[in-house]
Length: 328
Image 1 (cartoon, rainbow, N blue to C red):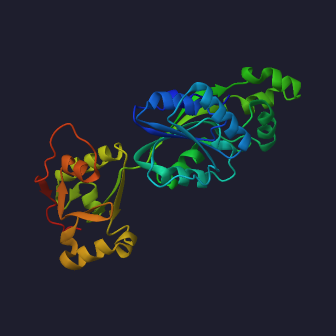
Image 2: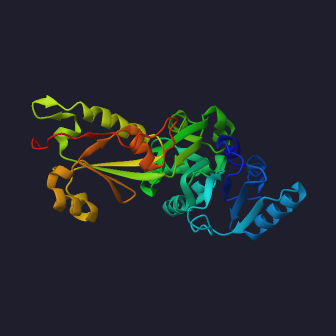
Image 3: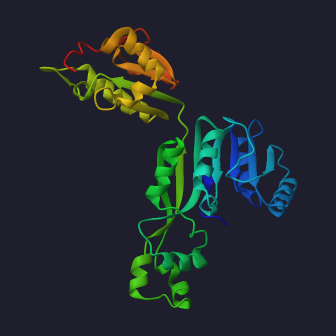
């Protein structure tokens, strides 16, 4: 039955390619195939022959053509890099013993800008191990469920951005009253420990369409205060970077004086510093390519470099000078 409805929550669009991790009998795959239409495609991945046979039988009965069921493990997805628009899953990832591999594989097969949109069971806060084992008998899929902050951290570590967990059902004591009574766990102490600690959640994240690295002169300039008078360019540029981070772009901001490691490791940065010294700062690198030296580009230019669509023309020629960096 799963723990949610990822096919509806993912807002699938015609022409998209969808992958269901742990597709079971294939119902979510068939629903996805109808939503993406004949120009799209839906894959289902399962590791058991019985489930694949059931799914293919369901496909034949439904008469859906734009579907393919694959045998494999969600820790090792048998699809090429950058081939999927949307990954869905219905209460399966929590069952994996190696969730880091699952999330890394999901990131690998998604296209830049691709969406991770799964339903999963999540633990909210600390739960005693004994209670967690007992509750698994009732709700299922709990023993391997991640704590909410751990889930977010693992998605970020895998490379995802715009990570969000939205509760779709929070399990209360009332939900489990009969179970607790039958198990001999219906005590005030157990009830307090359990209430609201388990939830079905819709987990969203996006594979960045680009990585933008900004190497700043120093912290004084990064905060918009440079020398005796503030530099008016910097707060505006910082706001543009914050906006860029909401557009499925990974934004990394480094500081020469307080974060020297990236300068030592990045050949592009070393070359620019050798050529221009600190006058090359701020140095802006997009997907490993140097895009700007010594200038603060406007938002439209940043968007163009990162591949973010804008509603108005990109103003490529407009660049603002960083001003003197001697204060740094």
